[in-house]
Image 1 (spheres, rainbow, N blue to C red):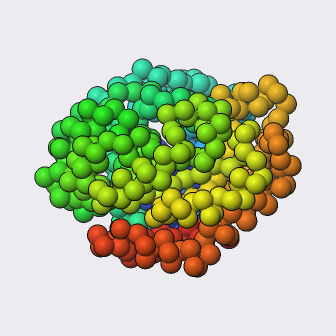
Image 2: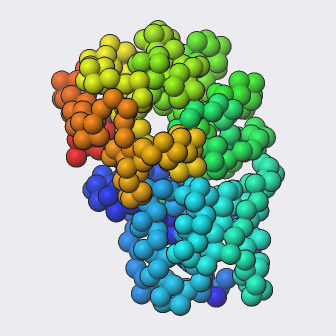
Image 3: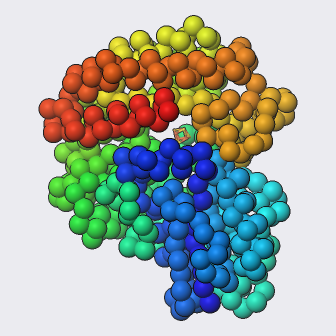
Length: 428
Ligand code: SF4
């Protein structure tokens, strides 16, 4: 029996990533986890394919079972693969975010849909499949950290990838931002800190990225984890919410344990826009102070902004590049608001007839797929392009890189590479 595991990517994304992917992507953790969940001895051969950097070849070999994981932006590619493998006689099962949000849609292209976390549902499906009676739908949300396997990182391609392993300590977040897709997929407790530290130690890497959606969200847990990894003498980065920048003890502990960068979803400089998507725990008036505080602890900040909230105005969005300059960020990123299926934002927009297209290829934060409240969709898209171009003029890139405290911490090369990479993505 042969099994093929695929993480699908949208062709739009792979087209530009293929030239630049080693600056942009980490080896797939999804595939490493899925592989580790396959019961031993069930298959004679298991192949693993990350479409972000590898081509899907339908005729390379015959697979008895093909398992495809995908996000909303890669749903069109994934469905194409499903149809092609089914035509060739393979049994096809799917899972991942989009299949969790819209299982009935996914079912039209495959034999089995696995929704939600895979830890229990995937092995259950595989055993049923091997016994000859697989069901059409599987969903088991009742998972806990004890169910998480050690990812099989060695089986996943590292070609044209950053040589930095990704780790997850806590995949939950207690906030409830209206547009956030995390809650559709993950609800679980954090892993024991000793286990996370041991996993990192065993990888013998010097740099790590945490995929936790809100690393510092559970403060006590984050403190314990950081103290546990401090003796490893590694450098790491993670996501954070802006309130991280108020907590000096937390920032100091983070730096000591190796934190050198945080990605903060600042989202908007308009307080009403933040409140409108239930992100009241961010105060746009304090962003400058917060970033200064984080810098004072030797940690760089990548600030992410979302354009197209209901309270956003054209004037404010056009002023973003100058206002971002004043914040003193090391890196900045812009996205168009995207109502992903499965989120409250999507449900609201669907109810109000504001969803303009369900071409999932366009749900990648670069396109306007809904009717904005105060702007024409094309105008919002034009402003988005303009903001990227302005924010990534060479003059601004130079100012960000050479004005950054990160330069003095030996991270100047990384920062320059990241700024150039983001410039390439943003104004491609
Ligand atoms: S803080 Fe981040 S991860 Fe948490 S709900 Fe909001 S957007 Fe999602």
